[in-house]
Length: 168
Image 1 (cartoon, rainbow, N blue to C red):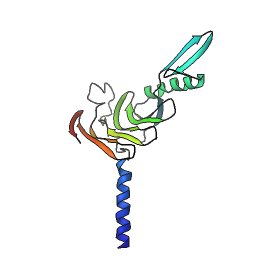
Image 2 (tube, one colour):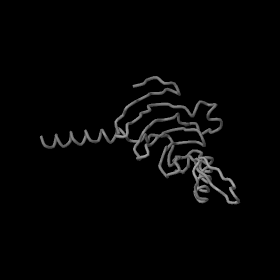
Image 3 (cartoon, helix red, strand yellow):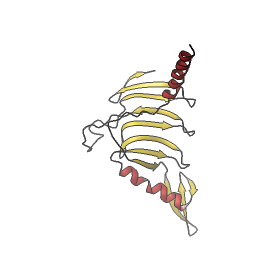
Image 4 (cartoon, rainbow, N blue to C red):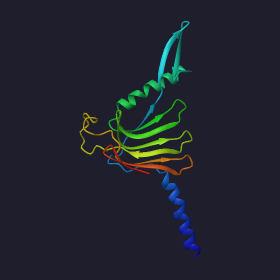
């Protein structure tokens, strides 16, 4: 009886861990992980001095250069696992991408680091990477789940090649 209770408890607790697990299934193997900063940058000369801004706030030259340098990571993501961060080094999204086209698992995060949304885009199993948007990629395909910050699933949608087919 004690063993059965212990087994039931383990299964019950593991169901909570699974509820917020990132979608990991993908046809892509050994993808390089690249970092991208979702920060709008600008520089201006003010009273003879260079002023750097990130998302409208004054930042250092080093931060400005780091944010701008990350753009090449998106451009060279062919495909890769692209981790997108905000100006405060918080992970915002993690997705299988080919440049600006999502082609696999996608996970969005709360500022706390907990999963906010988990879903999947249509994967490219053909190996041909030209004109992905025109060939019907970069669209939601599969189950998408939105979580409360406590980990509880609050909304589930199912997509079939970009069309919403179920909404719970």
